[in-house]
Image (cartoon, rainbow, N blue to C red; front, side, top):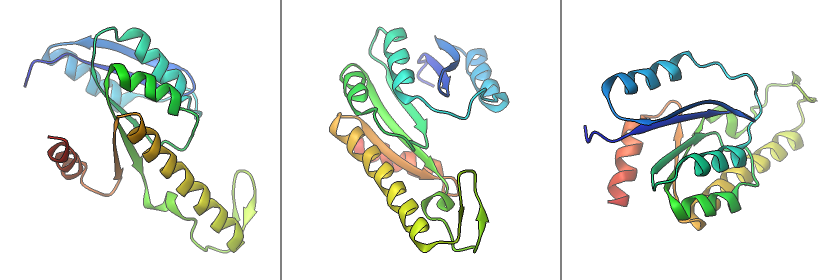
Length: 166
């Protein structure tokens, strides 16, 4: 509507797709098509690498939205540098089932089997640490932070976020 340029970086532990910012309806449609059809090569994530890449390719100040589950750490320093140059907002996307492992009895997992209350408690603590790291990293770097559960209205969340920032 404002005829702004829009670009896209899709990443895992490498840059998987980069579409430089451009204007136009056909360009926006290309980005939407890429988002719908995209299948990552890797299940790993390297947020620091993605932030550095974005900073290197974006020479002019930009409004940047970083969408991720942010189940990682170690990106605070890079984020601080990037958000000093760009207007950055982190949008943490999560599912309520990621917050706590339910007591389902013995469950086969990738790394271990567990029915243990202590394992579930440790997982919850780990998850809370990642969420706290996300909040602190973004807020202390001067960037915005927003969490959106997959079963919630992202439109309502975004409108509320922009009203608070306005």
